[in-house]
Structure formats: structure tokens, C-alpha cells
Amino acid sequence: MTLYANIATRSELLFRPESEELARRFFGDAVVDALPRFVRGKHKGAIKGMIRYDRVLKGGWVRTGNAAYGGKAPGYVEDRVGRIIKAEICTAPWGEEPEVLHTWNITAADLSFKSRTEGLVA
Image (cartoon, rainbow, N blue to C red):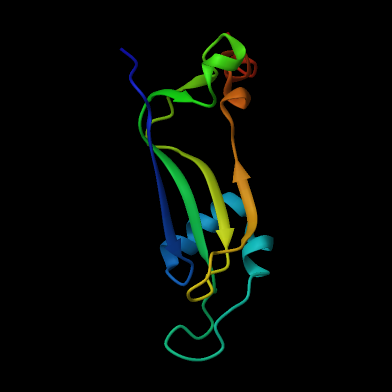
């Protein structure tokens, strides 16, 4: 029986200090400082927009396609429990679909066993 990974997609508005800190950690100060800010109201001077991210809640198999077309089951094992694997900064217009401005994504291929151990000194 296959145990599938549990990955949650969450979003937070950037006017909160915790969300702004998260955005700065993934995208850097230059990108976050270039975002538009509120000009009046309760959040005057705070950043407009939101950050959406995927966090791994439980490790397991992530299926990325249909096995009928390739013979093998395409996918990868996700073992980065508690880590953020994808983040996006979006605009948040009222009543519309958010527009993605910047994306940060790390794939399982980037974290293969070989690349994890390349920099280690024995």
C-alpha cells in the first residue's frame, strides 16, 4: 500500500510582520521592497499582496503523472517534513484571482541524494 505525502497550500497577507519576514526570507529584500504599499487606512505603509506557500505536513510518495503512459509510476518521495517547498508572491485584488508576481520553487530533483551529499566532508 502506498503512503502519499500530505502537502498543504497556505496563504497569508503581507501586511502582517510574520508574513513579510517569510517573504523576505525566500525572495530577498529587493523584491519585497519593490512591492506596492498601502497609502491610507489602517495598514498605511504596509505591503500590499500575499504570499502563498506549500508546506510538507507528512512525507510519502508524490505522484506527478499517470503510470499508463510511461510504464513506470512517475513521481518522487517527499521527505522534507515541516519544510516549505514552494512559495509565490501574489497581488490580492478583491474578488479576482491573484496574479503571481514572483515564484520560488525547489524540486525533488534538486535534492537528490547525490546533491545532498556533494558538499559534505568525510
